Image (cartoon, rainbow, N blue to C red; front, side, top):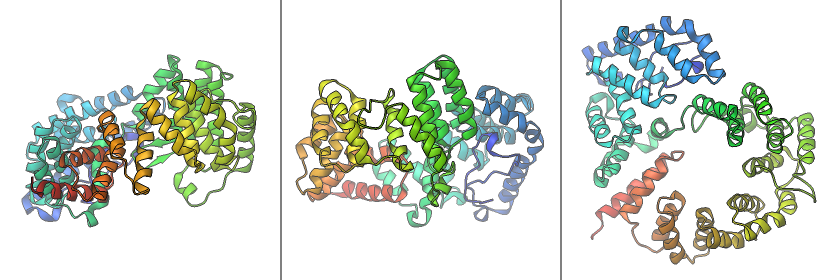
Length: 475
């Protein structure tokens, strides 16, 4: 157990029968003997709850596997009646449901704090709940109280407080707060901390919603369900293909839409392509090779759909088609240049004769992957005819590389897409290229936008430093 990490906020399915004590950000060595004793006693109370929740582990996991998240949640809540729950019960339940049921997690942590108002471990969770709910003034006050506590003075929570201060329109205070961090040493903790409040909703919750969509015959839900099973992401950094879910969910999709429907056949082909490689991303990264037999089956499936060759057609679902192309390249079935040759003319015609953003995205992705010189022309067309932010960003990046930054295009693009992080980053680069300080307001907006993406502590550190310089510059 690390004394510098948060309580584990995972659904019961991930605890694998082991109820560990919370891994709080509280640094025990920084607190007095009496408070340390209270802290250890509370940890023990939480750990002892394994006797309550371990017995329902197996049935709870089964409920999650079936997409019955509400039933899973209710089983956890019913294990101990509300009138009999202690602060430890509500604290643990709030953590278990943190990314599954955010509103309920907030309510549980609020109850826990009311029962034990001086417990800094509970107060930390409450601050995160307030932050996620956008209750900035309350979050700022709670963080301030926590960060004044000796155990939190070196906490990565300073990163969340800095963000809260930006949201409250206090950029100078935000910069000062960020400077309390040792980014070189704490970058991993900072990124993980930002992930607590900005990370994705639990994949089990998303899967439950998508299963309901498939049951009501929503085609996009079928696509998104299979894509989720292929990349089952517990957070921004950890995902794994769930072959057990894929088998069950493909059968559900077949039953809902028919196995011969073009979109369903494409999903089956995509799954075959993905299954040419190991399910675990770490195994793939270590050089896992495609399974030759599965590659042959996948090639046959793609050929039957006429997605390759001189007579290739458009995918019935462009989003699935894009993933099929990428998977074909990884499996060694086709190169990007071959895919471009098969699809470019038809996609180009759709982009130019119809207002078809999906075709524009597909063609842009293909030309970029193939390093085609025709990408610049398509970007220009995509910006002028579609107002596409990605096309604008590509054009602006190219103008900067050429040493001729297109300030007029930047102004127009930002007016149309003022919060687009790609355009905001380019605006900062344009400012630096011209030897001028970036606008403080622009930097603040970029920091907030960047924190909601996969966080990069070092990149944020550079932005906060620039923001400090911009605020200190003579007006």
